[in-house]
Image (cartoon, rainbow, N blue to C red; front, side):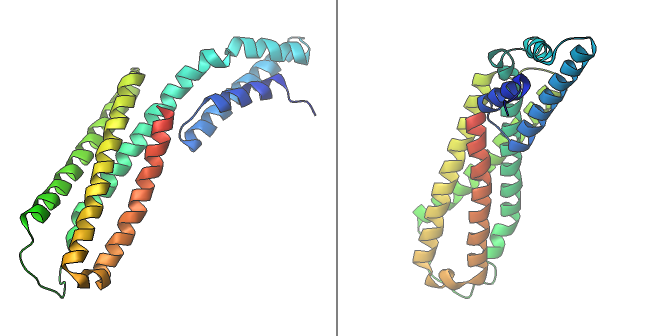
Amino acid sequence: MRASLVDQHIRLLDRALSGPAGLKRRMLTEARDGLDDAVRDLRAAGHARSAAERAAVAEFGTVDEVAPAFQAELAASAARVLGLRVVTVFAVSAICSDLMWQGAPWTGPQPPTGYLLLSAGVDWLGKLAVATGLLGSVALWLATRYGRQVSARLLRGAVVALVAVLMLVAGSGLALYSWSAEMWDAALTWPPMIAGAVAMTAAGTWIARAASTSLRAT
């Protein structure tokens, strides 16, 4: 069965958009509902189905005309999701990270200066990621609330900067964990350390998925 003009138009719009799947699905559903309503009104006014569909699609606008507005909303939503995930993960990890070490059954020499500097660097990078994610999410929420358009270039730059910070956090955190295991062999079998590593891997994957979606959307 041949797809209707409305189906074809929605399919083309779907291919042109990228962003959070749930929001994208809702936006396309609303667009389809609006087109279907327009077709029904035109049909009730005496137009043939094909003519009604052509008129409804023409009034709705071409994909090139309407996609930028849809994409802007998807990009802003994806960036907010990324920022909130970063804030959530780093806030929880700041509270729980010390639990990985409390009661550890090993002792050793004072860590070298390089290790202490790396540890401090990881902490500061984490704080920078949280501040960036929080401020960005609040700014996007306010812009949406007051109907202000966020520059696509500015949004893209902010997302890229946050992702760069996250990559530095991931790299330096992995280096710190590996260095800890090298200095204290028992850390590799210490249950809180193992649980922490598993939890942070899952959290990193959760953030990475949001980062990938946000980069595509922006």
